[in-house]
Structures are given as structure tokens and as C-alpha cells.
Amino acid sequence: MKNSKKQKIIIGLSGGVDSSVAALLLLEQGFEVEGLFMKNWEEDDKNGICTAKQDLADAQKVADKLGIKLHTINFSSDYWDDVFAHFLAEHKKGRTPNPDVLCNQKIKFSVFLDYALTLGADKIGMGHYARIAENQGKFQLKTGLDESKDQSYFLHLLNQQQLAKSLFPLGDMSKTQVRKIAAKAGFVTAEKKDSTGICFIGERNFSQFLQDFLPKSEGNIIDENGAFIKHHQGLAFYTMGQRRGLEIGGGFGQSGEPWFVADKLIKSNELVVVQGENPLLYHQILIASSAHWIENLPTLPMTCSAKIRYRQPSQNCKIEQNGKGLKVIFDQAQRAITPGQSVVFYQQDVCLGGAIIENRENK
Image (cartoon, rainbow, N blue to C red; front, side, top):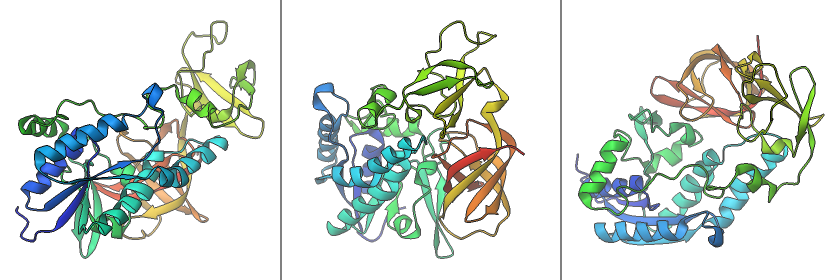
């Protein structure tokens, strides 16, 4: 459907295929479009960890191809203060935060949105795989139709004002369709590999990266019976369910099966590991705090579905009030519920909001 008003949209052009096609689609829908490339991290150029220079060059080529203006802005100080400082603080507590969730709330749909409005934008556009729908004067965040690419999990902290000012042109498309459109348009990004993980870590070993910012705090790695296995460098460098990087050699355990992180004992600074698909990896209940609801404050208790990590299939659950927080009771026990991560709630294809996982337990 063509847009009758010539609304101005500032599209976040990242130098990737998704934002390239999103910009093209907005132009085809009749909007006035300009691009905005944001730099969120002062990368270590000599190691080539972040690809900001190449991404900017690709974004400029796409903008030139489309005949649109490209603005650039550096939000690195905002990112450090609002995202990375929290990321480090959470790891110091032995938790595992999700910086991408916070980046969307604090950077892409806050300082980016504010800056775009100063450029005269009516709304911003992003290449996210999600949809926005208006329902009785309120805005809903809905899942992307391509389930394998749906990014609503990372967007669950958005509020009504942010959704009202945002467009997601790719929400009803598949990645395959997006790449075909990019190839037909002759975009340099058409076959560009998707970026994975967090820019400031890139291809580096995650534990080694953290050690540049957090002090080591040696403790014991123990099995489920409390038997000593080896020393660890700090609970901050491990996460629930982790297998790689434990470096537990032969001579431990009975089965020869791989070892996984089952728990972090913060007070004693001990890391508990188990072999194979041990029941200690599974919990049916989680306790969550800082609940955020996108559309309406729900009446609890209620049944819905939830995800405890990105790309996990939705799991049926019941949400109950738990003091100032929430208790989420799953129909089936969940593997590696991780404090610091987000639990995100859904009713069919509508994202209701989410909360921060604090703890887990069994019935």
C-alpha cells in the first residue's frame, strides 16, 4: 500500500542486508527516507574486532544506490554508560545479562530515535524481524513471520511511545526473500554474512574479553556432590548450561559424557558442574523482577507462553505475582534457566513484555 503522506523516515542503516532492504521497501512505500549509521563501540582496529569502518562504507554504498542521504553519529559514550556498564556490573555479580535487549531500549529506540527526530523524522525504521500493530489506540509488538529470524525477544522492553514512532518493514518477510530483493537491487550487502553476537566481543574468546575488564576471582569447580575438580578464574566468566571452556580433562566423572555448568554458588565462589543431561540442569519455576508490559498491565495469575532465551520455541507457562516480582511456572522443566537473562512473554504472536530472571527452583 502506498503512503499518501510524504512522511520522513530515518532508517538505521547498519551496513547489513536487512537494513538495506528495509530502506528500499520504505522508499517503495512512498516515504521520504534518509539513513543514519550509528557507531556504538570504539573498536580495537588493530585486531579487527568490530567492522565499523567496513560497515559504514557498505551503508554509504547502499545509500548512494538508493539516492538517499546518509547521516552518521557516534553513540559510543551512551552505549558505554547505558549498556556496557550494566553488562559489567551484572557479570561482577555472577549473572549473565543480555546487552542486545538493553541496546534496543536505551540506544536504538531512545538516543537514536531522539536524534532522528532532531533531523526532522516523523518515525524511524529498523531492519528487525518483528511487526507493529495498532489495536484500539494501543500498539502491539508482534513476532516476525519468519520464526527462525523473529527478533521480538530483543525488543520486549519497548514502550508505547517507541513503538508508535517505529516501522519494521521486514516483519512479514523471510530472510531468503530479503536476500533475493537485495540481490535484485544490486546491493553490495546482498550476500554479506550476518553479524553474530555482540560487536564489542566479536570473534574473541568471551572469557578472555571479560578478563580485560573484570578482576579474576579464583575459586573451586566442584561436582554435584561437592568433590573438587579444578580451579576457576571467576564466576563472572561462566554461564548456566555452558559446556565449552570448562577444560575438564580425563579422570573426572564416571561416564565420559561432557560437563556442563549447573549452578554458581556466589557466597562460596564455587562453580557446580554436572555430566550429561543431569536433572540439576533443569528447573520448572523461575523468579523474575523488573517486569515490563508493552500494552496493558495483565491480571495475574494468567497463562501464556514464554521464552528464556532467543530462538527458543515458546514454552507454556503460568505467571503469578511474587511480591514485587513474578513467579513463572512452566508446564515442562526448562534447561539452563539463567539469572540476568530475560524471560519474554507471548500470547500467540503478540509479545506481551518480559522480566529479568533472578532465580530458579523446582516444585
